[in-house]
Length: 276
Image: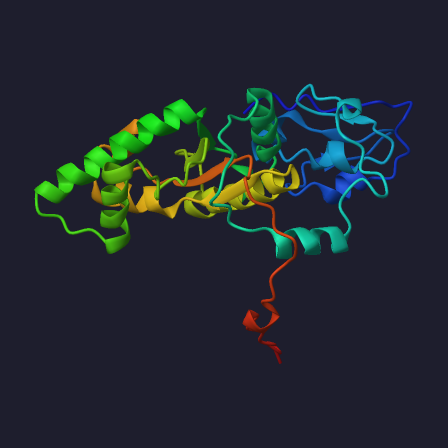
């Protein structure tokens, strides 16, 4: 763990003890003028930065991170419930993409923001791998199709969707696997992840909302995970171990615009559990 380096600006501190009360590990205390975090307690720190975030006057720095470099959470700075409601109801799986690459700076910005998605025990041991452009996606498609064909020759029977996609690609160059998406995000957990599968899916869900709020199109790419589970060598294309878990999402500039949300209220299966 990086050195805690817990620092309090005594001139700013109002002794409200918000940091003491909000520390999940309980390693911050105040007996004198300002709060302290004892050096021996550093090993219990979750590196959550709650102390930096909760201080109302910006008096606390930690890990060498200064409060003035954080985004202020002012009234109106985050989306309203109505805005989030519209985003959640209005997001669609996009299967029509413009024939253009996204700026690398935009992709990098999305991934830096994605690093703030929650992980179990704040492990933060996820790798975000990107297929960076249409050319690389075309190469990936060819390799995946070839790998499927090789497996078919050995007697493996695939779902009809997969076999039809291979036929459509070989007969006319049609891409029914990646839908012509210019980019692919692969999220994989590392050895430090306590909830690797869950955190992978959480990260992709957060990425989808980030991307769609930036007017990008996204589609969960279950097909590459399905193929990788059956066809040897697919994970290696992403520099993953043969048994490594991952999931993926296609994204890019959408070539379609939806005019309204769909109507799925009746699909909510709601139960009330009263604990006596």
